[in-house]
Length: 555
Image (cartoon, rainbow, N blue to C red; front, side, top):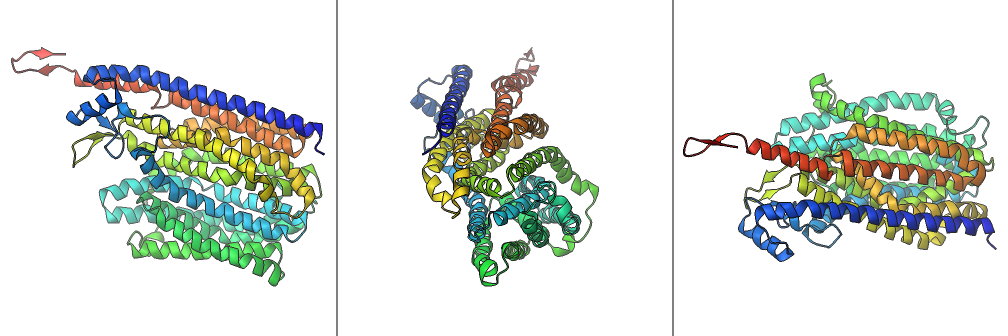
């Protein structure tokens, strides 16, 4: 029988998330209403009828004056907010699906690792691997700005068709990634126990499993940096299929080697680390080979020190994102330390690892949409003329319409994924044969599922902030959210145990959602008032003193 405390917590979850859903719908409806107040003036100014058919008819007869969304077949003023499976949705899906596959592969392989380590029947083994993984991922996360900035810079250069500049850009990113690895790897190798003490208390039983895992895993840092730059380079030239193929190839190696190393060769947890290292080596070699084959890199450029002038765009953009990455690192390291300290048996830490896997079932889709937002929005902001049709595409109004569609997708998919995760919880919990771990993971996994309702809007909204180039505001929002999270983490786990850690995650993401709302409604370039201000400036510039045919001037 389940306890009254469990049912009470479940009731609270449902009430809070129902409120979140209502608030989200109200925010979207409120924003839509404001959009409708803005666009009628545009329609009236252009002499366009208010019906959808009228809008499209007028747009067809006056293409040079009407702004279109990407693809050039939907006028901005006729764009729908909610998913409608039109050409805009089709284009977004084409960009998103390969990204989703890429995001999905790593967590799925992580779930396979967790499955085999769980089969060892030792909670401390799972806890040790989880702690070491978190430390390694945090070290790697310090350079996570590199793929974001690299993809943007590659896209800019690739559009010019300058092969030499493209090689320079990718080679510089590989140089920075290699430099980071050559500094980070020795630090991880020589200070494994000291670094692990950040998340494991002194004398923690799980340290015996965590230390050898981290030592072996550290050798993959260089190859992982090469792979992530390679992935970003292909994404920059809008080739999102090749990275998927490489990820499947490399991770299948990991899947095959895991049971061989862990059980057949009796290596235990270190065997899982070795399998991962071999997979990362295969991935890096494949990326570098293909980049060289496509003449996107030259090895002599990789090993030459680039000038500050060439490195400046990469490093300045990265520095702006690094504050945010540090804050996110602090969040996950704090969580790992608290979960490891809840009990000394490793059950809470193992249950937390299981709850994380539950979150990643849907989180990968939402994170992929965040990447789509960060890629599509900057492209859509730029107003351009299609050479074939002469139609005007892009601009702030078009970017706002695309942003609205993406945010709606975030809410819809987040809700559906949350429901899906709740339905598959029994199957996910069978990843471990330990009943005490399953029971401890039940409520945190339910919380992880319910949070997806607003996580979609959080991730996509932050992707929009990256796409708009508002890195400082994103960093400030993350810092404030982290402060709120740490306050919650100091108190809630004392009362609710592991569930308290996940209640703190809820506080963290709700504060991030508040930051996204402020950006979209007040401070960001796609806020209605800022778009109106931009339109006003353009109108004033267009209405400057102009000499007409009679020699007179008019404003």
